[in-house]
Image (cartoon, rainbow, N blue to C red; front, side, top):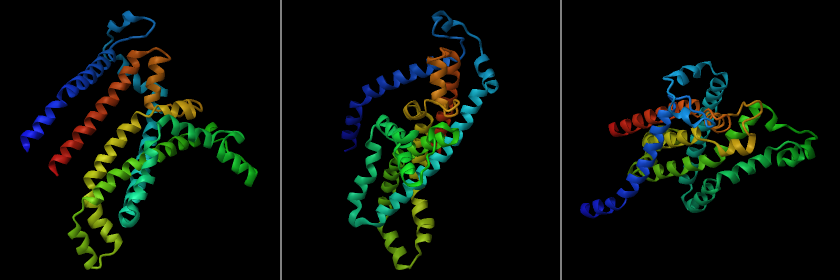
Length: 288
């Protein structure tokens, strides 16, 4: 049986080497360019090394500092909501086994929607004027409107809600798999001992779901740091460049302002951060 498993694993080795080689090449090239003054109009500048100048300039760039701050707020709020909502949905479905198949299908639908479609849906929901569906109802019933995308914090709120709408279902799927892996004899024993639901969540569900929570948090963190399409469609980085999250700011710096070397320095920091988080996560799982 083990021999058969190894044989099947050999079939995917070429794909692993090809994909891994491409990813490694891109990462190393980004790292190299971060030490250069490379700009797209001047291809020869790709070999003009300036040491750590790009990294030294980062703390003095007000747009980078603000982008980093807003990205931190976006990640913390969205990640918290997605984990809480995902856990609640998984708990709800697990508690209602009779209709679990129906609920699983319904709650899984948002993750199946293309990101561009989801982003456009939220743009239409919160657009200014009567073109926005929410403003149309506010105007009809309350004779008022809110310029959701014209104010920095409300625009950030819309971006957070769009991501929560799509990816809380991703957390739901991971948590539901964790719920179904809890030994049945432990659950039966908790019912016989008349354990309260609050105690069951605290002492049974959460400890068993701890590895799933960590996995979901890391995967969602990676996706939150590479958000791009929803910003492009919903806010375009505005208003006042407030919703230019780090990934979007890197794109704008590299491919609209043509400062590829500086953009590569920012991208390198994200890569290093994600590598550290992944290594710490894997190390913690191995200890468990």
